[in-house]
Length: 531
Image 1 (cartoon, helix red, strand yellow):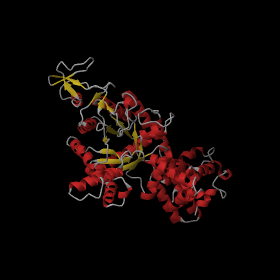
Image 2 (cartoon, rainbow, N blue to C red):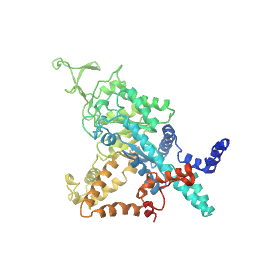
Image 3 (cartoon, rainbow, N blue to C red):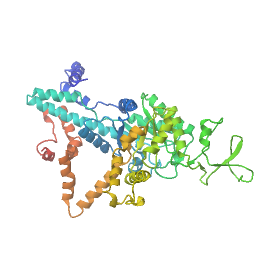
Image 4 (spheres, rainbow, N blue to C red):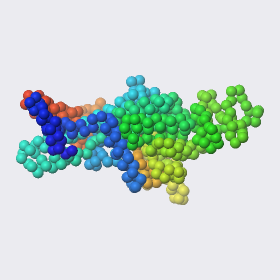
């Protein structure tokens, strides 16, 4: 409904109680309703699922229409991302938020900082989703509140043209509510545990859940060693559990991202159950590192499997884990991806050890031979040394073309000595276009950085501490923080407004009229930033 229609609707609701609700103003009700467009997390999940589905269709039609997100560990961080995106680009279209399990573990656990091994409280994940959307909804309320004040000012000045323009802006307000790609790790337990946690996440507003094929109680960060995968049937049961949760809660178009860690995982906790040659269990077992049993190599407690009439002994480690054959990672990734898409997943995530379009695109090409519209979510991870990787890629490309690379030491390409070189410039250009190129050439629909604000918070805090506690003193804060906020138009320079003080003043006026004791008067020091 338009602004005027919302007012009229509120007036209709108030009319039967005119004698007792005399202090309730229809326009004030309408403003509060518009400032609270999304009443529940499920409202948000349904709305944002529609956004993702439309964006996925747009990408299928044109790979230039890829999407992006940045990871966040606090509602304020997510809110500021969306406010900044609207400020710089005018719309949030194609920009999401990512909820990183790594950052939840490192920054949100009651145990203190934890590694990314699913040791943190599982409830902290849906709690962060709810927190993110609370802050995004407040960003809507704040922005609309400022428009309402502009409308009042235009009316008071008798400027009907301005009033009409502001009302049009209210009617066409672009919400800060965007999809969150939410990390459920390996499901925090069995399929039932995955289902229960998925429900909590969806009820908090998640329209997209990312789940990985590692063993829950052996889970590792995707960029660390020691990863252990599960047989496909175990993983597919969890994918189905997530889909059931979406269906039960009335979000049938919720999005499931199936992540495979097989590229860097050389271990499995169990041998897959198989009924016949060539079935999915048999395919999983075919990658095991085995030796044929000849009688003399059978040890106490060895486990045996049969294949093609032969008796084989899988290599079992003292940890009771079984080992895959070296060099099978890409084949296992491709099989993981195809089976996931055939059994309810919507998007893929292939965790890689480096950002290399050729490597990713090669696997996607194989997947698309079976699933033509397969597409990826890709982790543009801070765990990669992007500068070194891309300088090495350029070095190797130049060398393959026969160009003279004698001025460069491949082992030292990270050195500051090369920062102004032609090789460094080409590497930086490849980094700049990586997302666009990978969307076109490697089937990547969504690019994200998992831990950006973890690193930006550390960097900015280090710079402030060096200046403030050093010779610069207070100038270290004023020059490098507050003055830049003013110059760049950062809304948080008026931190009272950002925290909701003006929204509270509006409510006080609605509730108490002329008797309202408001904070935004002449003595409020935030007025110093009006200029």
